[in-house]
Length: 170
Image (tube, rainbow, N blue to C red; front, side, top):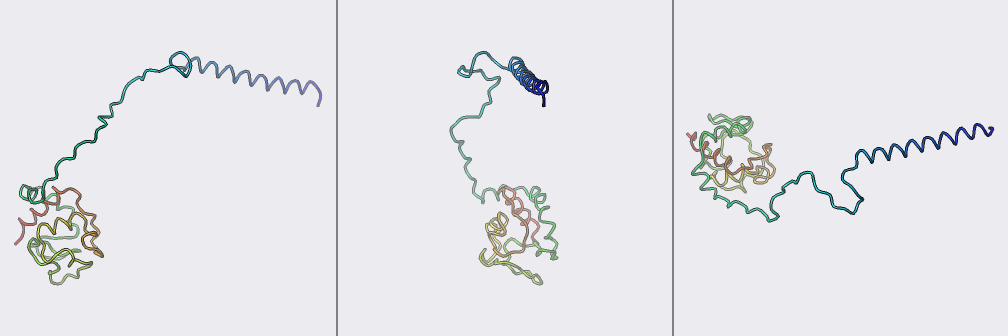
């Protein structure tokens, strides 16, 4: 390796470094916002309102009896569409037992249906309160049930379904 080759390599490295530093200087000049160094305050382009720092007041919970009394049967029929995959209201069993006359009926009393889980811990009869508990969380209310439904999280939907079931009870 002769001195001319070493000079070319050193010159290439120095030239690349020079181009890099000039590019950095040019970019900072073009894209730097505001003047001065890091110690100065900068104004925001816009402010995002995050609301008050005080916790929001929770709405008072309406008792289930009031929700059931004011429930709309038409809304209940629409919400019951989620239940139709497994339950019928015409008196015949499907994947789940029929729900015709379920309100007030003894729990686990549909003939010809093999119940799963521990329904007896729910209660003796399907009162609106017991139905509300099971519709909210079926697996929590009756452990071991094969009912794959996750439940209805809104109390208004549960009340509407129970009102609908009361209306079709024969």
